[in-house]
Length: 68
Image 1 (cartoon, rainbow, N blue to C red):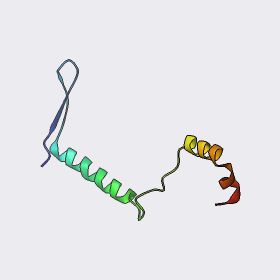
Image 2 (image 1 turned 45 degrees about the vertical axis):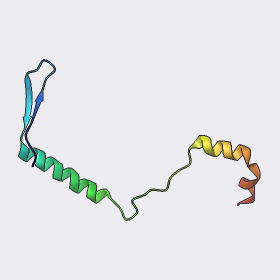
Image 3 (image 1 turned 135 degrees about the horizontal axis):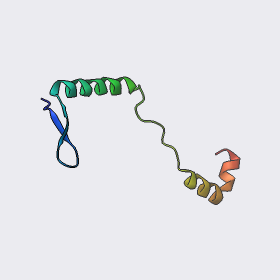
Image 4 (image 1 turned 135 degrees about the vertical axis):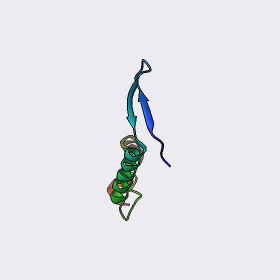
């Protein structure tokens, strides 16, 4: 169950009231949008940070040229 939300201004006065129906609609729109963005492969290939690659290239220059 989602309850209505009251948003207040810094001075304490009421700025906006968001109804539970509107919050529920916002929640489900976001939920379905996120579901549609999920692909078959959910874990992307991790990339090596540039500074790590540069340091490895300096320490092991032969392994880069040999193709290993």
